[in-house]
Length: 135
Image (cartoon, rainbow, N blue to C red; front, side):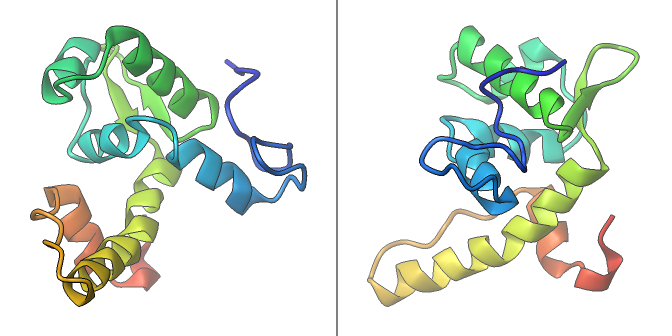
């Protein structure tokens, strides 16, 4: 299910015509609610209604769009019950985000700001997982 506005490696994205995968990743991850949705899916499969309950404040239209985008780019899929879950590539994204989470805590501390709240279970596991054991 391809969406014309879902960023894809090798294709131009907002702010970049280069087609570089990193630019597509930044475009995708920078979308409203996207990182929070990925974090919730990192905890395990979620049906739409449960996802909306956990993501208090997200509209149903934004949530539906983000879930379709994640599926279109291969980071999420639906299981037999219709629940959304991260794919292998989606799970490896949590591992890739772990150093950024840790860096942002250092940055906050250096500037006198509060560090992040405790990370989700999935992110905690990604932070402590050796790089060699990417899923």
